[in-house]
Length: 456
Image 1: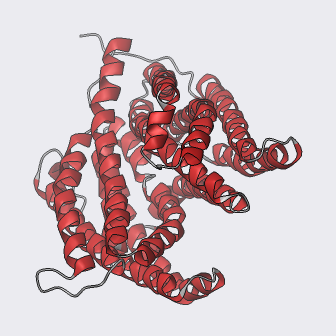
Image 2: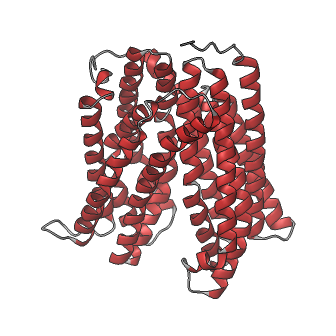
Protein backbone atom coordinates (compact mmCIF):
# COMPACT_ATOMS: atom_id res chain seq x y z
CA UNK A 1 0.00 0.00 0.00
CA UNK A 2 1.43 3.36 -1.02
CA UNK A 3 1.09 6.78 0.59
CA UNK A 4 -1.09 9.04 -1.59
CA UNK A 5 -1.25 12.82 -1.72
CA UNK A 6 -3.83 13.80 -4.34
CA UNK A 7 -7.43 12.84 -5.06
CA UNK A 8 -6.31 11.30 -8.35
CA UNK A 9 -3.80 9.07 -6.56
CA UNK A 10 -6.39 8.09 -3.98
CA UNK A 11 -8.94 7.22 -6.66
CA UNK A 12 -6.37 5.04 -8.40
CA UNK A 13 -5.48 3.35 -5.10
CA UNK A 14 -9.14 2.55 -4.43
CA UNK A 15 -9.50 0.94 -7.85
CA UNK A 16 -6.24 -1.01 -7.46
CA UNK A 17 -7.74 -2.65 -4.37
CA UNK A 18 -11.34 -2.64 -5.60
CA UNK A 19 -11.13 -4.54 -8.90
CA UNK A 20 -9.49 -7.73 -7.52
CA UNK A 21 -11.91 -7.69 -4.55
CA UNK A 22 -14.86 -7.41 -6.95
CA UNK A 23 -13.59 -10.32 -9.06
CA UNK A 24 -13.12 -12.36 -5.86
CA UNK A 25 -16.71 -11.56 -4.81
CA UNK A 26 -17.94 -12.65 -8.23
CA UNK A 27 -15.93 -15.86 -7.87
CA UNK A 28 -17.54 -16.68 -4.51
CA UNK A 29 -20.96 -15.88 -6.00
CA UNK A 30 -20.17 -18.23 -8.88
CA UNK A 31 -19.70 -21.17 -6.49
CA UNK A 32 -23.26 -20.76 -5.22
CA UNK A 33 -24.38 -20.32 -8.84
CA UNK A 34 -22.66 -23.59 -9.87
CA UNK A 35 -24.25 -25.43 -6.93
CA UNK A 36 -27.74 -24.23 -7.84
CA UNK A 37 -27.59 -24.58 -11.62
CA UNK A 38 -25.94 -28.01 -11.69
CA UNK A 39 -28.30 -29.34 -9.02
CA UNK A 40 -31.20 -28.11 -11.15
CA UNK A 41 -29.82 -30.03 -14.13
CA UNK A 42 -29.85 -33.18 -12.00
CA UNK A 43 -33.37 -32.90 -10.58
CA UNK A 44 -35.85 -30.15 -9.65
CA UNK A 45 -36.23 -31.55 -6.11
CA UNK A 46 -32.46 -31.38 -5.65
CA UNK A 47 -32.51 -27.80 -6.95
CA UNK A 48 -35.12 -26.91 -4.31
CA UNK A 49 -33.12 -28.69 -1.59
CA UNK A 50 -29.91 -26.86 -2.44
CA UNK A 51 -31.82 -23.54 -2.60
CA UNK A 52 -33.33 -24.17 0.86
CA UNK A 53 -29.94 -25.20 2.25
CA UNK A 54 -28.31 -22.09 0.80
CA UNK A 55 -31.02 -19.83 2.25
CA UNK A 56 -30.37 -21.29 5.73
CA UNK A 57 -26.59 -21.06 5.40
CA UNK A 58 -26.32 -17.62 3.77
CA UNK A 59 -27.27 -15.40 6.77
CA UNK A 60 -25.09 -17.52 9.08
CA UNK A 61 -22.11 -17.39 6.73
CA UNK A 62 -22.44 -13.64 6.15
CA UNK A 63 -22.71 -12.95 9.87
CA UNK A 64 -19.70 -15.09 10.78
CA UNK A 65 -17.67 -13.67 7.90
CA UNK A 66 -18.39 -10.20 9.30
CA UNK A 67 -16.85 -11.25 12.61
CA UNK A 68 -13.71 -12.74 11.08
CA UNK A 69 -13.24 -9.92 8.56
CA UNK A 70 -12.69 -7.62 11.54
CA UNK A 71 -9.10 -8.83 11.27
CA UNK A 72 -8.80 -6.55 8.24
CA UNK A 73 -9.30 -3.07 9.83
CA UNK A 74 -7.38 -4.06 12.98
CA UNK A 75 -4.43 -5.45 11.00
CA UNK A 76 -4.54 -2.45 8.63
CA UNK A 77 -4.22 -0.04 11.54
CA UNK A 78 -1.31 -2.02 13.01
CA UNK A 79 0.28 -2.06 9.56
CA UNK A 80 -0.10 1.72 9.35
CA UNK A 81 1.49 2.00 12.80
CA UNK A 82 4.45 -0.15 11.60
CA UNK A 83 3.76 -2.74 14.32
CA UNK A 84 4.59 -5.96 12.46
CA UNK A 85 4.49 -8.26 15.49
CA UNK A 86 1.03 -7.04 16.44
CA UNK A 87 -0.20 -7.62 12.87
CA UNK A 88 0.92 -11.25 13.17
CA UNK A 89 -0.71 -11.63 16.59
CA UNK A 90 -4.05 -10.32 15.30
CA UNK A 91 -4.05 -12.78 12.38
CA UNK A 92 -2.96 -15.67 14.62
CA UNK A 93 -5.81 -15.04 17.05
CA UNK A 94 -8.20 -14.65 14.13
CA UNK A 95 -7.27 -18.23 13.20
CA UNK A 96 -7.96 -19.35 16.77
CA UNK A 97 -11.40 -17.73 16.61
CA UNK A 98 -12.14 -19.34 13.25
CA UNK A 99 -11.52 -22.77 14.82
CA UNK A 100 -13.74 -22.02 17.83
CA UNK A 101 -16.55 -20.61 15.67
CA UNK A 102 -16.42 -23.52 13.20
CA UNK A 103 -16.75 -26.03 16.06
CA UNK A 104 -19.61 -24.03 17.57
CA UNK A 105 -21.52 -23.91 14.26
CA UNK A 106 -21.07 -27.66 13.71
CA UNK A 107 -22.30 -28.47 17.23
CA UNK A 108 -25.32 -26.16 16.90
CA UNK A 109 -26.09 -27.63 13.48
CA UNK A 110 -26.02 -31.15 14.94
CA UNK A 111 -28.78 -30.23 17.41
CA UNK A 112 -30.88 -27.71 15.48
CA UNK A 113 -30.65 -28.47 11.75
CA UNK A 114 -33.19 -31.30 11.71
CA UNK A 115 -35.78 -29.41 13.84
CA UNK A 116 -35.48 -26.34 11.57
CA UNK A 117 -36.00 -28.38 8.41
CA UNK A 118 -38.88 -30.33 9.96
CA UNK A 119 -40.72 -27.11 10.80
CA UNK A 120 -40.51 -26.01 7.17
CA UNK A 121 -42.81 -28.90 6.14
CA UNK A 122 -40.84 -29.64 2.98
CA UNK A 123 -41.36 -32.61 0.67
CA UNK A 124 -39.30 -35.56 1.91
CA UNK A 125 -36.79 -35.54 -0.95
CA UNK A 126 -36.28 -31.77 -0.76
CA UNK A 127 -35.71 -31.95 3.00
CA UNK A 128 -33.22 -34.81 2.64
CA UNK A 129 -31.28 -32.97 -0.08
CA UNK A 130 -31.17 -29.77 2.00
CA UNK A 131 -29.93 -31.73 5.05
CA UNK A 132 -27.30 -33.69 3.11
CA UNK A 133 -26.15 -30.55 1.27
CA UNK A 134 -25.56 -28.71 4.57
CA UNK A 135 -23.84 -31.76 6.09
CA UNK A 136 -21.51 -31.85 3.09
CA UNK A 137 -20.90 -28.13 3.43
CA UNK A 138 -20.06 -28.52 7.13
CA UNK A 139 -16.83 -30.37 6.26
CA UNK A 140 -15.59 -27.13 4.69
CA UNK A 141 -16.46 -24.72 7.49
CA UNK A 142 -13.05 -24.75 9.16
CA UNK A 143 -11.00 -24.05 5.98
CA UNK A 144 -13.54 -21.44 4.85
CA UNK A 145 -13.28 -19.50 8.10
CA UNK A 146 -9.48 -19.74 8.20
CA UNK A 147 -9.39 -18.56 4.58
CA UNK A 148 -11.49 -15.52 5.55
CA UNK A 149 -8.95 -14.62 8.25
CA UNK A 150 -5.98 -15.01 5.90
CA UNK A 151 -7.87 -13.10 3.21
CA UNK A 152 -8.41 -10.24 5.68
CA UNK A 153 -4.67 -10.22 6.42
CA UNK A 154 -3.80 -10.10 2.71
CA UNK A 155 -6.31 -7.30 2.16
CA UNK A 156 -4.86 -5.36 5.11
CA UNK A 157 -1.50 -5.28 3.32
CA UNK A 158 -3.23 -4.02 0.17
CA UNK A 159 -2.39 -7.12 -1.93
CA UNK A 160 -5.93 -7.90 -3.05
CA UNK A 161 -4.84 -9.37 -6.40
CA UNK A 162 -3.42 -12.46 -4.65
CA UNK A 163 -6.85 -13.54 -3.37
CA UNK A 164 -8.36 -12.87 -6.80
CA UNK A 165 -5.88 -15.25 -8.47
CA UNK A 166 -6.55 -17.96 -5.87
CA UNK A 167 -10.30 -17.64 -6.39
CA UNK A 168 -10.03 -17.76 -10.19
CA UNK A 169 -7.84 -20.87 -9.98
CA UNK A 170 -10.36 -22.59 -7.71
CA UNK A 171 -13.46 -22.05 -9.89
CA UNK A 172 -12.64 -24.76 -12.50
CA UNK A 173 -11.87 -27.15 -9.62
CA UNK A 174 -15.24 -26.39 -8.02
CA UNK A 175 -17.06 -26.85 -11.34
CA UNK A 176 -15.33 -30.21 -11.95
CA UNK A 177 -16.02 -31.49 -8.43
CA UNK A 178 -19.67 -30.42 -8.65
CA UNK A 179 -20.06 -32.36 -11.89
CA UNK A 180 -18.32 -35.42 -10.46
CA UNK A 181 -20.19 -35.58 -7.13
CA UNK A 182 -23.64 -34.53 -8.35
CA UNK A 183 -23.76 -36.87 -11.34
CA UNK A 184 -21.49 -39.65 -10.01
CA UNK A 185 -18.68 -39.37 -12.57
CA UNK A 186 -15.08 -40.64 -12.52
CA UNK A 187 -15.87 -43.43 -10.07
CA UNK A 188 -17.33 -41.10 -7.43
CA UNK A 189 -20.76 -41.72 -5.85
CA UNK A 190 -23.82 -40.09 -7.42
CA UNK A 191 -25.01 -37.76 -4.64
CA UNK A 192 -27.31 -35.38 -6.51
CA UNK A 193 -27.71 -31.92 -4.96
CA UNK A 194 -25.99 -33.08 -1.78
CA UNK A 195 -22.83 -33.58 -3.84
CA UNK A 196 -22.60 -29.83 -4.32
CA UNK A 197 -22.01 -29.46 -0.58
CA UNK A 198 -19.15 -31.97 -0.54
CA UNK A 199 -17.66 -30.49 -3.73
CA UNK A 200 -17.70 -27.00 -2.23
CA UNK A 201 -16.10 -28.24 0.99
CA UNK A 202 -13.21 -29.83 -0.89
CA UNK A 203 -12.81 -26.59 -2.85
CA UNK A 204 -12.62 -24.64 0.43
CA UNK A 205 -9.80 -26.91 1.66
CA UNK A 206 -7.90 -26.30 -1.59
CA UNK A 207 -8.43 -22.53 -1.37
CA UNK A 208 -7.30 -22.45 2.25
CA UNK A 209 -4.25 -24.59 1.43
CA UNK A 210 -3.16 -22.28 -1.40
CA UNK A 211 -3.67 -19.18 0.75
CA UNK A 212 -1.79 -20.74 3.68
CA UNK A 213 1.14 -21.63 1.41
CA UNK A 214 1.34 -18.11 -0.05
CA UNK A 215 1.17 -16.40 3.36
CA UNK A 216 3.88 -18.71 4.72
CA UNK A 217 6.31 -18.57 1.78
CA UNK A 218 5.79 -15.43 -0.30
CA UNK A 219 6.81 -11.82 0.37
CA UNK A 220 5.61 -9.57 1.89
CA UNK A 221 3.40 -11.99 3.86
CA UNK A 222 6.21 -14.33 4.95
CA UNK A 223 7.94 -11.45 6.75
CA UNK A 224 5.08 -11.55 9.27
CA UNK A 225 5.44 -14.59 11.59
CA UNK A 226 1.74 -15.42 11.44
CA UNK A 227 2.18 -19.15 12.03
CA UNK A 228 4.97 -18.85 14.59
CA UNK A 229 4.26 -19.28 18.30
CA UNK A 230 0.85 -20.84 17.64
CA UNK A 231 0.83 -22.06 21.24
CA UNK A 232 0.73 -18.49 22.53
CA UNK A 233 -2.88 -17.57 23.18
CA UNK A 234 -4.24 -14.29 24.54
CA UNK A 235 -7.90 -13.82 25.31
CA UNK A 236 -7.34 -10.06 25.10
CA UNK A 237 -6.36 -10.38 21.42
CA UNK A 238 -9.45 -12.46 20.70
CA UNK A 239 -11.56 -9.98 22.64
CA UNK A 240 -10.29 -7.10 20.48
CA UNK A 241 -11.33 -8.94 17.31
CA UNK A 242 -14.72 -9.82 18.80
CA UNK A 243 -15.34 -6.25 19.96
CA UNK A 244 -15.01 -5.06 16.37
CA UNK A 245 -16.22 -8.21 14.63
CA UNK A 246 -19.41 -9.06 16.53
CA UNK A 247 -21.15 -5.74 15.72
CA UNK A 248 -19.95 -6.11 12.12
CA UNK A 249 -21.20 -9.68 11.91
CA UNK A 250 -24.55 -8.94 13.56
CA UNK A 251 -25.11 -5.97 11.27
CA UNK A 252 -24.52 -8.17 8.23
CA UNK A 253 -26.68 -10.96 9.67
CA UNK A 254 -29.63 -8.67 10.39
CA UNK A 255 -29.40 -7.11 6.95
CA UNK A 256 -29.38 -10.53 5.27
CA UNK A 257 -32.16 -11.89 7.47
CA UNK A 258 -34.27 -8.77 6.77
CA UNK A 259 -34.41 -9.73 3.09
CA UNK A 260 -35.33 -13.28 4.09
CA UNK A 261 -38.25 -11.95 6.17
CA UNK A 262 -39.44 -9.80 3.25
CA UNK A 263 -39.35 -12.91 1.05
CA UNK A 264 -41.51 -14.75 3.60
CA UNK A 265 -43.98 -11.85 3.78
CA UNK A 266 -44.24 -11.79 0.00
CA UNK A 267 -45.04 -15.51 -0.07
CA UNK A 268 -48.71 -14.54 0.48
CA UNK A 269 -48.80 -12.91 -2.95
CA UNK A 270 -49.21 -14.60 -6.32
CA UNK A 271 -46.56 -16.83 -7.85
CA UNK A 272 -46.00 -14.13 -10.48
CA UNK A 273 -45.26 -11.53 -7.79
CA UNK A 274 -42.88 -13.84 -5.92
CA UNK A 275 -41.02 -14.76 -9.11
CA UNK A 276 -40.75 -11.10 -10.15
CA UNK A 277 -39.50 -10.02 -6.72
CA UNK A 278 -36.88 -12.79 -6.60
CA UNK A 279 -35.69 -11.90 -10.10
CA UNK A 280 -35.36 -8.20 -9.27
CA UNK A 281 -33.68 -8.99 -5.94
CA UNK A 282 -31.19 -11.28 -7.69
CA UNK A 283 -30.25 -8.48 -10.09
CA UNK A 284 -29.85 -5.97 -7.26
CA UNK A 285 -27.82 -8.47 -5.19
CA UNK A 286 -25.50 -9.02 -8.13
CA UNK A 287 -24.96 -5.27 -8.59
CA UNK A 288 -24.50 -4.84 -4.83
CA UNK A 289 -21.15 -6.60 -5.19
CA UNK A 290 -19.72 -3.32 -6.51
CA UNK A 291 -20.46 -1.14 -3.43
CA UNK A 292 -19.60 -4.04 -1.08
CA UNK A 293 -16.23 -4.37 -2.84
CA UNK A 294 -15.67 -0.62 -2.53
CA UNK A 295 -16.56 -0.99 1.16
CA UNK A 296 -13.96 -3.71 1.72
CA UNK A 297 -11.27 -1.59 0.07
CA UNK A 298 -12.40 1.49 1.99
CA UNK A 299 -12.17 -0.22 5.39
CA UNK A 300 -8.57 -1.23 4.66
CA UNK A 301 -7.49 2.17 3.32
CA UNK A 302 -9.11 4.18 6.10
CA UNK A 303 -7.76 1.77 8.72
CA UNK A 304 -4.24 2.05 7.31
CA UNK A 305 -4.30 5.87 7.22
CA UNK A 306 -5.74 6.09 10.74
CA UNK A 307 -3.01 3.75 11.99
CA UNK A 308 -0.39 5.95 10.28
CA UNK A 309 -2.05 9.04 11.84
CA UNK A 310 -2.78 10.47 8.39
CA UNK A 311 -6.23 11.65 9.46
CA UNK A 312 -6.73 14.01 6.54
CA UNK A 313 -6.05 11.17 4.09
CA UNK A 314 -8.44 8.88 6.00
CA UNK A 315 -11.16 11.51 5.74
CA UNK A 316 -10.57 11.99 2.01
CA UNK A 317 -10.67 8.24 1.38
CA UNK A 318 -13.92 7.97 3.36
CA UNK A 319 -15.89 10.48 1.31
CA UNK A 320 -14.23 9.55 -1.97
CA UNK A 321 -15.39 5.97 -1.43
CA UNK A 322 -18.95 7.09 -0.65
CA UNK A 323 -19.00 9.31 -3.75
CA UNK A 324 -17.64 6.57 -6.03
CA UNK A 325 -20.24 4.11 -4.72
CA UNK A 326 -23.06 6.59 -5.37
CA UNK A 327 -21.84 7.36 -8.90
CA UNK A 328 -21.40 3.69 -9.82
CA UNK A 329 -24.75 2.72 -8.25
CA UNK A 330 -26.47 5.53 -10.16
CA UNK A 331 -24.78 4.57 -13.44
CA UNK A 332 -25.53 0.86 -13.20
CA UNK A 333 -29.02 1.59 -11.87
CA UNK A 334 -29.88 3.87 -14.78
CA UNK A 335 -28.65 1.23 -17.26
CA UNK A 336 -30.79 -1.42 -15.57
CA UNK A 337 -33.85 0.86 -15.73
CA UNK A 338 -33.27 1.66 -19.41
CA UNK A 339 -32.88 -2.03 -20.30
CA UNK A 340 -35.20 -3.34 -17.57
CA UNK A 341 -37.40 -5.40 -19.90
CA UNK A 342 -34.41 -7.04 -21.55
CA UNK A 343 -32.84 -7.78 -18.14
CA UNK A 344 -36.12 -9.15 -16.77
CA UNK A 345 -36.38 -11.36 -19.86
CA UNK A 346 -33.22 -13.20 -18.77
CA UNK A 347 -35.12 -14.60 -15.80
CA UNK A 348 -38.46 -15.55 -17.31
CA UNK A 349 -40.33 -16.11 -20.56
CA UNK A 350 -43.69 -15.16 -19.04
CA UNK A 351 -44.94 -11.70 -20.01
CA UNK A 352 -46.57 -11.03 -16.64
CA UNK A 353 -43.37 -11.85 -14.72
CA UNK A 354 -41.23 -9.77 -17.09
CA UNK A 355 -43.51 -6.72 -16.78
CA UNK A 356 -43.67 -6.88 -12.98
CA UNK A 357 -39.90 -7.48 -12.66
CA UNK A 358 -39.29 -4.45 -14.90
CA UNK A 359 -41.58 -2.41 -12.64
CA UNK A 360 -39.71 -3.52 -9.52
CA UNK A 361 -36.40 -2.55 -11.14
CA UNK A 362 -37.48 1.11 -11.26
CA UNK A 363 -37.74 1.07 -7.45
CA UNK A 364 -34.48 -0.87 -7.31
CA UNK A 365 -32.59 2.13 -8.76
CA UNK A 366 -33.29 4.26 -5.67
CA UNK A 367 -32.81 1.24 -3.42
CA UNK A 368 -29.36 0.70 -4.90
CA UNK A 369 -28.24 4.29 -4.34
CA UNK A 370 -29.44 4.23 -0.71
CA UNK A 371 -27.70 0.91 -0.12
CA UNK A 372 -24.45 2.23 -1.62
CA UNK A 373 -24.44 5.18 0.80
CA UNK A 374 -25.04 3.11 3.92
CA UNK A 375 -22.59 0.36 2.93
CA UNK A 376 -19.65 2.70 2.28
CA UNK A 377 -20.32 5.03 5.22
CA UNK A 378 -20.42 1.98 7.49
CA UNK A 379 -17.20 0.65 5.91
CA UNK A 380 -15.40 3.95 6.60
CA UNK A 381 -16.53 3.81 10.25
CA UNK A 382 -15.12 0.28 10.46
CA UNK A 383 -11.78 1.68 9.31
CA UNK A 384 -11.93 3.97 12.36
CA UNK A 385 -12.92 0.89 14.43
CA UNK A 386 -16.17 2.66 15.32
CA UNK A 387 -18.73 -0.13 15.05
CA UNK A 388 -21.03 -0.29 18.09
CA UNK A 389 -23.22 2.74 17.43
CA UNK A 390 -23.13 1.98 13.69
CA UNK A 391 -24.55 -1.46 14.47
CA UNK A 392 -27.40 0.04 16.52
CA UNK A 393 -28.16 2.52 13.73
CA UNK A 394 -28.37 -0.21 11.10
CA UNK A 395 -30.42 -2.47 13.38
CA UNK A 396 -32.98 0.33 13.85
CA UNK A 397 -32.98 1.10 10.12
CA UNK A 398 -33.42 -2.53 9.05
CA UNK A 399 -35.96 -3.75 11.60
CA UNK A 400 -37.76 -0.62 12.84
CA UNK A 401 -37.91 1.32 9.57
CA UNK A 402 -37.47 -0.97 6.54
CA UNK A 403 -39.86 -3.74 7.57
CA UNK A 404 -42.61 -1.71 9.34
CA UNK A 405 -42.69 1.00 6.65
CA UNK A 406 -42.68 -1.62 3.90
CA UNK A 407 -45.52 -3.53 5.58
CA UNK A 408 -47.62 -0.36 6.03
CA UNK A 409 -47.08 0.77 2.44
CA UNK A 410 -47.82 -2.69 1.10
CA UNK A 411 -50.99 -3.39 3.08
CA UNK A 412 -52.44 0.02 4.01
CA UNK A 413 -51.35 2.28 1.14
CA UNK A 414 -52.46 -0.04 -1.63
CA UNK A 415 -48.94 -0.46 -3.05
CA UNK A 416 -48.74 -4.22 -2.64
CA UNK A 417 -45.30 -5.74 -3.17
CA UNK A 418 -43.98 -2.37 -4.37
CA UNK A 419 -44.47 -1.09 -0.84
CA UNK A 420 -41.75 -3.40 0.41
CA UNK A 421 -39.29 -2.00 -2.12
CA UNK A 422 -40.12 1.54 -0.95
CA UNK A 423 -39.80 0.48 2.69
CA UNK A 424 -36.39 -1.04 2.06
CA UNK A 425 -35.26 2.09 0.20
CA UNK A 426 -36.47 4.47 2.93
CA UNK A 427 -34.85 2.40 5.69
CA UNK A 428 -31.53 2.07 3.89
CA UNK A 429 -31.50 5.80 3.11
CA UNK A 430 -32.14 6.54 6.81
CA UNK A 431 -29.22 4.26 7.69
CA UNK A 432 -27.02 6.01 5.13
CA UNK A 433 -27.84 9.46 6.52
CA UNK A 434 -27.36 8.40 10.15
CA UNK A 435 -24.05 6.65 9.41
CA UNK A 436 -22.80 9.64 7.42
CA UNK A 437 -23.59 11.96 10.33
CA UNK A 438 -21.75 9.59 12.65
CA UNK A 439 -18.79 9.55 10.27
CA UNK A 440 -18.65 13.37 10.26
CA UNK A 441 -18.78 13.38 14.07
CA UNK A 442 -15.98 10.82 14.38
CA UNK A 443 -13.76 12.71 11.95
CA UNK A 444 -14.34 16.08 13.63
CA UNK A 445 -14.34 15.15 17.30
CA UNK A 446 -12.02 12.15 17.62
CA UNK A 447 -9.59 12.42 14.73
CA UNK A 448 -8.72 16.10 14.44
CA UNK A 449 -5.01 15.90 15.19
CA UNK A 450 -2.78 17.86 12.86
CA UNK A 451 -1.20 15.58 10.31
CA UNK A 452 2.55 15.97 10.28
CA UNK A 453 4.20 14.91 7.03
CA UNK A 454 7.84 14.26 6.57
CA UNK A 455 9.77 16.85 4.62
CA UNK A 456 12.14 15.18 2.26
